[in-house]
Image 1: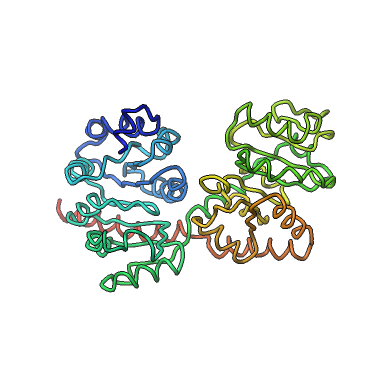
Image 2: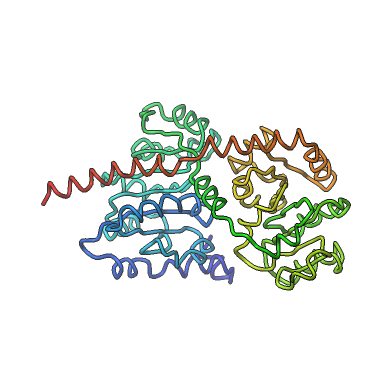
Length: 411
């Protein structure tokens, strides 16, 4: 289907096909006979961010190993193809026995790390035949997943041979145990999400922006991150709160979206960051961030965060504002994200379906007791779930130490 779409001119499908044409040639040129390889695989950018803290910790502690990073999605590859902590970045070949054999013949990894949902039968099967240590990190399992259905009985043979699973929550561990009675439960560790370690580190190093501080002076701030058109419409009635100001960072940086924001609030109330000066910030009530790279630090100024994407494919990064301990509001499509689901259940985060519900939740958070309870819930979740990277890294150290011992014994 992807190849058919590529022939009809679909850009993502075309990139998927084109990007896989020279993978084996690239690997032949980049990998030498004595190279030691650790292979990380991510579906796309979101999964990469979950694996990134571990990649960087491994790279810092094992500089003699080359890091191979593969992506399934063209979007993830295009954004991170020059990622400095990976020695080789490429696409994962299509999942076939021939591709898996050729790929592993070239790479010969000492360790394979699959991130979250990436289950490719032939690659997993070939890795287990070769007894290559293969682990999953930040994994989430639900009973209804297709891999557990009768149509996917082949997966049973590889699931039970995977070296170790590091899952995000106890329900994922319980799901695997219930589905695979012959899988040793000691090979499953509830470790949490490594992204939490990363966003907490980012929050500690948050950048200060003097112009933004001048804009915020004397007001409470709502930061709306990664917004789309529908999110902007949801926020329209926020202009009725004179004690507040809005910082809005659109997901797509284009003139159409900027104009939508300015038309909704009025040009006289809006100010684009690129035009902001010490003289004109005080009069504005909406600051539009028209660049990339500021958002994660902007949450330091927020009392409440709104995260976009919940009326489309799914919400964007909620952990970045949560790292500052602030309550979060977003649209209805959030359940595929563990932290968002848990925080909605615990009333640290809030899902809304329309502007009326947004105003209702906003007013609830205006109550100091309710706000403090939500903030405390967020902070506790982040504190309780930090440390995944170190847990996984310690296990990786054990594997790599054993690999080095085996190599020494052979020589």
